[in-house]
Amino acid sequence: LSISRGVEVVGTGEEAAGEQPPPLPQRSHADVLDTWPIPVAEGAAHVYTECARIFNPIHTDRAVALAAGLPDIILHGTATLALAVSKLVNLELAGQSQRVFRLGGRFTAMVLMPSTLTLRLLERTPDTLFFDVLTQSGDPALSDGFLCFR
Image (cartoon, rainbow, N blue to C red; front, side):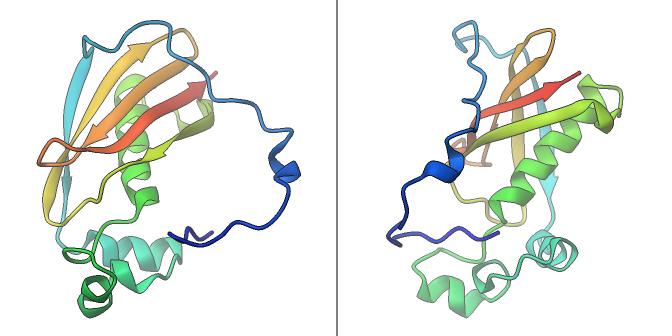
């Protein structure tokens, strides 16, 4: 898996034609149902890189990150999603990860380390949790998050 910024996409997109659209929330998210802090350790990007085997030097090499125009090394978007989903599974699904069958969201801001993220539960339906994750400065690191469960 790799995501590249500023690279032209080639193809018709037919591969994704059978993909279902994401679930839509039923209410406005003006009211947040719950919030939880998620601490992000200084070495989190290095640990995630090795464990997930997702090698991109913007997450582990400061010189490469700075040369790419980033303020420093950043946490992987998928690591941010994993931290949020782990917290939701533990707190909302009693740790029963096998109940999760679909999840998604949009990576919308960089996560620097060390920092503390804020996971916000925006809506709870019988089979879906809608959420977002804010950076320490309050920017949305992950938007339009959803976790579908059985």
